[in-house]
Image 1: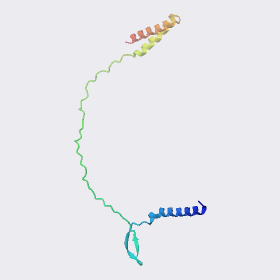
Image 2: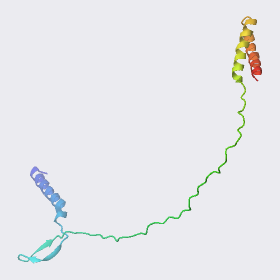
Image 3: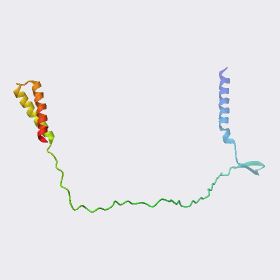
Length: 135
């Protein structure tokens, strides 16, 4: 294809595509109102106003039925006229047990000249004796 024909067809294609792109703008949706000026028709495009009036719906106020509240009051008791004595708490046995174990380990270490088995045996025996003395 020669250059002149290509240019001509390109320009013609552009013109046709521009006309096709603007064709919807040439359409009208108005009404034909008679002929004015030598019989030429004219088109009127009235503003399409749509008014939607929704009906007013009035509902009655909701009524809630619930049981009456119940309040619980604990019964009232008179304070006792006599208070019992405070309970007797024994001496803390844990301190006696630990003290007996330390003393037994020291005595077992001195008597056995530092042998580990005698130190362990002395601490166990001392813990048992200290616990027994605290009770």
